[in-house]
Each structure stands twice: as C-alpha cells, then as structure tokens.
Amino acid sequence: MFKEKLNTIPHLPGSYQMRNVNNTIIYVGKAKDLKKRVNSYFKGNVTGKTAKMVSEVHDFTYITTNTEQEAFILELNLIKQYNPKYNILLKDDKSYPYIEYIGKPEPKLKVSRYLSIKKKDNKVLFGPYPNAYAARKIVNLINRLYPLKKCDGNPKKVCLYYHIGECLGYCEKKIDNTKLVQMENEILEFLKSNDKILINKIIDKINNFSETLNFEAAIELKKELQYIEVILDKQKVELHDYINRDAIGFYCDENLVSVQILFIRNGKIVGGNNDKFYLISDLYDEVNTYILNFYSKHEVPKEILVENGLNTDIIANILKTKVDIPKKGNRKNLVNMANVNAKISLEQEINIIKKDEKRTIGANEDLMKLLNLKVLNRIDAFDNSNLFGSYSVSGMVVFKNGKPSKKDYRKYKISLDKNDDYNTMKEVIYRRYYKALVEKLEMPDLIIVDGGENQIRACKEVLDSLRIDIKVCGLKKNNNHRTNELIDGDTLDVVDIPRDSDIFHYLTRIQDEVHRFTIFYHKTIRDKGSIASILDNIDGIGAVRKKELIKKFGSVKKMQEASIEELREIVPEQTAKNIKKFLEERDKAKNEGN
Image 1 (cartoon, rainbow, N blue to C red):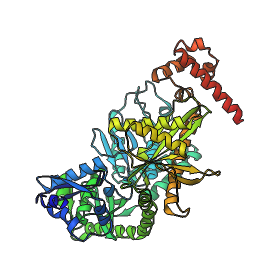
Image 2: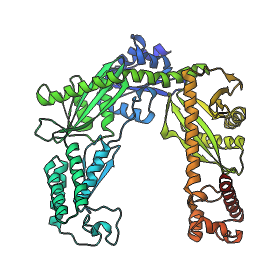
Image 3: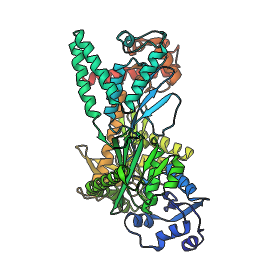
Image 4: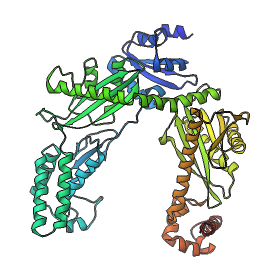
C-alpha cells in the first residue's frame, strides 16, 4: 500500500508532510518535484538524522501547488501550524530589540521587540541590536539629552521630567514645531550613524554642568561618553551607500547546518545571528526555508547578500526585497565573512550539540524503548504543593523531544479545602485533559505524576472516565527528596533504571523542573501578601466580587476584622465563611512558621 502510494505522487511542486504512527506530522518539506523528492527518502541511501526521521514515518500526505514559490509559502505556513519534530531548530528563535522612534502625536524613543515586523505610521525602527543592554543604554542617554516624552498615557499636568528639563511638557504646553523638527532630525541622524551629533551633544552638556559647578552630573555624563564611544566603535565596512543590508553564509558538516546572518546597518556591522539545525532534505532548500522563516519574525533589510546556489528569485519575491549574489569586492567579502563565522561556530559547538542530543533526545528515546511506547514526543509532568495547610496549587511542565517546552507550562489553583493529594491529583488531571478534549489540544504520549501508587491511581481513574488512553508513570523520592524510583502505571512495578544512566538523569531533571515550577508558583501566591492575591485563593470569589471587596475594605486587616454580616453585604454567606476561615488559617500558618 505504501509503495503504491509513492508511485501515485505527481511530478508537481508542493509541500509534503511525514506522519508517525499516531498520525502526527513530524516533518514538513517542499519540493519542485514531489514525486522525486518523497521517493528519494524511501528508495535512496539516507543517513544521519534523515534516516532517523524516515524510520518513524508511518504515512505521508502532500499538497500540490502551481509554482515552487507557492510551495515555499505553503511549507512555511505548515511548519508554523504544526511545529514538526524534525523542523525544530536547535536554538529557539530570538527576538532582537530595536530602537523605535515615534514621531507623533509626541516624539518618543524606546526599545521594542517585534516577533513580526510591520511598518507603522509615525514609527521608525533602528536595529536589530543583538546587545540589548547597549540598545537600552543608547535610548536612556538620548532621553537624558533630549526633552522627549517620557511618560505613558495622556496625563493632564506636567511631571518631574518637565521640571528637570527632560521633557517639553507635551501634556499642557504649546510646543514650537521648529524645535521639534530640529530635535527629531538630530536623533534620527545619530541613529542612522552620524555619531558626532550625540558625542558633541554630550560634550556640550558636560561643559554646561562644569560651568555651573555641577561636577557630579558632569562626571556621570563623562562616563556615559566613554561608554558610548566604546559601543559605537563597531567594525567599519567600506560600503558608503549606507544601505541596511544583511549578509548570509552557511556551512554543513555531519548532518548539521550552521547559518550565520551579519547585520550591516549604515555602514557598520552591528551584530549577527547564528542558528544550527539538522539537515533532513536538500541543503539549499533547507537554507532557503530557514531564511524565509527568519525574516517572518525579523525586520527585512533593503538588501540581502547570499551565497551562490540559493533561490534568490523566490526569496526576493516572498520577502519583497533585493537579494543578490555578489561576485567580488566588499559585498562579496561580507558573504565570505558570514561563511567563515558559520563554519567556526559549528566546529566549536558540534561536540556540545552531540552531547546535548545524547542527554536529551537520546535519553527520551531510551525512555520510550524502556516503557515499550511506540512514540514519545511529549511528556506532561505534574506536581502538587499545599498552601497554608488547606489550599493547594498544582503545576504542569511539558518536555518535548527531551527538552522543556516552557510555553506549554500550566499553573492550577486547586479548589479543595484540605490537604488531599489523591483528590488534588484527580482535579488537576480532570481540568487539564477535559479541556484538551473539548478544545482538541495536543495530548502527551506519557504522563508523569510526582508520587507513587496513590497519585497514579488518581490519574488513571480520571483518564479512564474521560476514555483517554495515555501511559502513566509515577516518580517517587527518597527521604532526601531526591528522585528514587520510576513506577510503571500499568503494573505498579518499579522500573529498574541504573542511577548513572542518561534516563535516570533525564527523569530527575523532569521531576526537579516540575517541583521547582510548582513551588515557585506556591511561593508567589503566598508571598504577595496583597488583598488581591489572597482573594484569588478563596473559593467563590471572582473578578467582580474581588473588586467590590477591595473597594469596601481596602486591606487584609480590615477584611479580617469584619463580621460575617459585613462580608455578606458583598458575598454570599458561604463565601463569607470561606474568607474568614482562610484568613484564620493564614495567620495560624504564619505563627507556626515564627
């Protein structure tokens, strides 16, 4: 059946999706000729990460397109939608800071991060700045030297910044437009690379402070001048057109690809970005896709310089910018520099990457074999923590392919009014997976609960009631609160794992992470000490009632001193009793702690 399906693939451009035994998409690719590309995986001599991916393929699907460019766009959209296992970069995508100048309604300068850059009215972006500290330092210095708007919102009266001469009082003063234009021109000229404007401005300020005997402020600005001269002393590039451009180089070795992007802004290299990923398909196709994916999250420069072999027409059409393959001169030297940096970076880190893969992905695969699972892409791990002896919280952390996926972590306030691990586990498992069923969220391949037979039974009871078939295991700790045993949820037997193995270290890391995450949440609630955070932990109080209680009592002390009758003016009698009980137990816990 599989071979017959391979034979029916058309000779057309499009995107293909490799699926595992659970019908989960594990890789998305694109091809100018779908039949040739997909068949090459199963009829050719594949090695490395490609062979590993092929070994997990149970089925494949494909979508044809009219052109290769449409195939690229479709591939990118599918990768964003499904986040396939074998399309994931070794490093998380970075969000670089930009310096953002806002011209109207009032001039303002700030550091901004954009995951998807969009041109906006009255806003001009400068960057990216790989050094976020340097970007903030520049913005703070310009804000000190020029009377830009500093505050947020629309206040009715001038604030302290106006009185110390660092704001023109935009909220109530009439501003001379000529002065605004001059200030804007100077700031934009500096950000476009005219360093002398800012340096001269600082020197003038230093002289003014010295003449008025304000030596402390003069010394402070002198330190700022020394710093600004250091961060502005970037590597000069002999390109006098001052076009914002990026130079891209890449290098491949041992099925790993390193891509280096150099950011050239106004004749200076201001930094760069390096990422590494496993090679699954054609090298040039993979780099083409990487470039398009990178600029879907970052500002697209006016020109991109690349190496020969990449599809410059498609990149240029999709990104709507100039893409060139320089043959000689300084622009060619920039691409060569990017290639060298890509190679050096990969050679320096290749052993680290291999060790990390063994510790994470390798340990995850070993655990999958140990538990006789067909697939182990996602693990959900749970832990409970009791608050003040009566109120509990739970935490869930997620590991995908051996690594924590922090965007999937979840926190839960438990409604139980007593310390009951069994029913706490039942509540959090029900809430998590009932919601997953209703909203069709991603399900794990393994659930790990912090504890032994009791917690496992609670978890499996809920899963059975929801008719969900997911493997469950428990992690028990010893008297020193360290990972001790893995309990198989099906047999309740202890799984034998050597203490020095990668699997044991992997499980310890998962248990430590979920415990850390849950305890931190526990402490955050406990230590806030505000009436709002306390009310969040009391059953029967939502946003409206919380607002009314805060408005009437204003403090925990006054609320604690109030009678049930006074509380009943805002909340039902049972909720009033919950409030009194919670506050009494809170005080008792504090006294015991002292």
